[in-house]
Length: 88
Image (cartoon, rainbow, N blue to C red; front, side, top):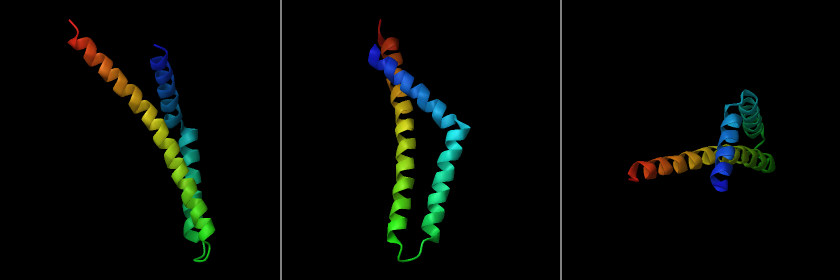
């Protein structure tokens, strides 16, 4: 059905993105930049630390969304496989 095809497409695209060297390096580079900003900020620079923290959390959320798309599709496939095994 259309929903399953959409889930499959999203899962495939998410896998490609998560396996992409350029994507992984970009995410890692930005995370490291933000961690450095956090670590090098002065004690009074709360705004910089908050911004760095928010960016790191946002990147983690993106990665989570991609892995969830993959997991959701794989779970749907397992359910379909099991229902086929049970059917007479």
